[in-house]
Length: 124
Length: 277
Image 1: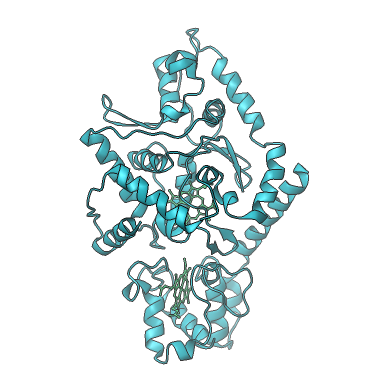
Image 2: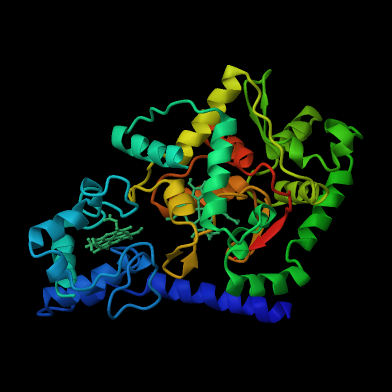
């Protein structure tokens, strides 16, 4: 009984490690010509970058958290793309008490990474 | 709880915390009330069980683990260490009330002579140095095992931490409280963002445990660690998660944090050592 339970937990741990370390930079480097949306998706889903799935359900991503709202229908929610960018740059401006990290302000993402994430989110 | 939420806002808006000094008693009432309302089907004493108090699926796995507790060996090792005399012939028992049995509930407390919060772990190491022995490492290993044994002999007692009406003790409490509600790290999150505002929600695949009862079961055996860790080890891990520099185990920051959080668990049973994912 103990064996079953602890091996299930060990398996879950292994999964997290695999997901945390999947190689990322090389795929960007070799993705010449891939669209900004595709690159933005990788950055948004990567655990060490956007890690948006920690909190948001996003089409194409598995095991999302449920801390923030599902990111759907974004063009309708944000007709002005600059406002969407500003939200991701620093969500505390519009929601002072938010848990969402200020991806631009705290340089969690570089300017070009942020721009690509915006393109991806805007496409949802 | 409204009060506490306002505190979070104040801390983040002003950077430097500027909080009205509600009494610890008022804080405790609001804090407990918030969680009892957020999880209406969970009785107070169940909050000793962290995420397993609120998530039936992981609770089942955990109950299976508890049938053959992974911390049992550590308790045995701790008991043996506890009873092994120092070179001068004395034992740990000489340093504690009641020979050190069932006394975890005495900690943390504000030591007016030393002018700081005393924790069980710091008392164990002071017992060693007082008797001419070297202090042990703070976060795991032998110290954690001794602490686990002492927690085990305290099981079933109720957490009842006192904050004396001494300004310095109140300051230590307030400092711990500010720490809990202050944003930190590149990810800009407070402890309360995860364990108060979002307790019960999922961060990726992990369910966030409620802060109420958080200090009941330390030291804890974590599968992720493959062993035992003290509560300051856990604090450091949660600081690192938000890309903040962790503080040292037994730093003033973590002692005061432990003081605040343990007080917030008053009324809940001591049930350490625990087992967690």
